Image (cartoon, rainbow, N blue to C red; front, side, top):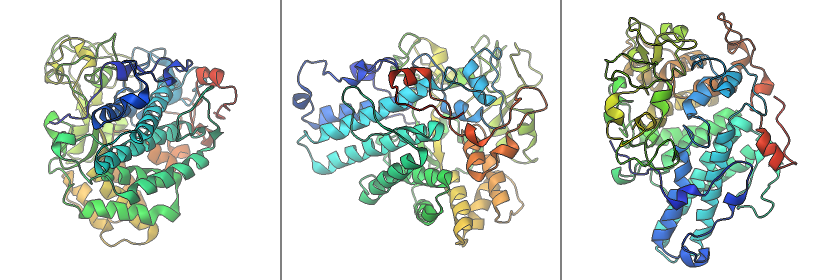
Length: 501
């Protein structure tokens, strides 16, 4: 296990307050020196780069809201319920699940997190011009910041679409023109193409630097954005990037699917990018959520009042969010090893059942007491489970889908079947969009991919419909593609136009 790009504690981590205030946008050096006199060497520029990475860790809990990235996406799909103690527990999640979000019930802290990341990336890019250091090292640092900025904007674009967009930090009154989702894409994809063409980043970093932005991450974001936009003119280029990863010796499928999400499986050759979390020497606590430490995700998705056993100690905390639907468990074929590696079946165990409980929970990020044993305090906030963002299996399935779309199918059926057979299934599947869709569904349960796939395939309106349990009573429609902007943001910028949700 390697967790080297971690959360930056201290003054640099505390440049942000609430979404309404803009005081945090005025950067002041805590030493009192002018910024131009502080950011003059590699050490201080690296501090700015660490600060730019820092917000990738914040969404699971911070700024008074839980926004674990896989939960935010999965609750809009068809594999999980929301759970918790009831419909008023994380009411915004329940409303988003039922396509009833509003200006008071949306993912408000995620907006602030991502714009904080954008702001810090812009800072690094600006400061780099002041620093006298090795130009090749500086170029790598700037490329990381530029790609991180694309990552933050990619999330904003996925969730809200029509957003303020800027590549240089703002001055008073700290507002930027809001542009359409298509305009955001048009600007962002060109920036990403430029980053890729400059080729300043390695395809894979060494073990001492795992967690940094890499050329492989750029390829994955590119394919994700192009496919979500259905930008068929760029499918060929996206396919070339996937082929570059396939032909590389840096990445490959893990032989055993069940090991991928274990602690020992972190940063295996299957991993393109993970967000690192660490339980040892944590500074993160309920009074300091943005400091160095672990993740609360396993606590969020664990059964409540667990009696002990199965690696989870008696009395360990679990809040019962995101129970797996029974239908999700049943969709796996007999012999598919992904079912047991994906779903924790606790039928027969007595614990405190919460809302929408099915006795199926997400195995991939389930809590093991060993995974927060080294936390000095607030253990339920400090599990060391890394969040897997991009895996090599997605490279293969992206490549198969893109190849089919552009009519360059040589090797594509093999890529599809490599994922299928790694799951322990011996039958051979033909190359077709339906089979690719099915394989993606089975492969990425709980990883925050499914909802976006349904939207980009045009399947959301027919799949995301009222259920037979009375939980989801509304159907997804095209105006649900982008979430409402929170009232605080609308109040702070009167020129912002609310999404038609």
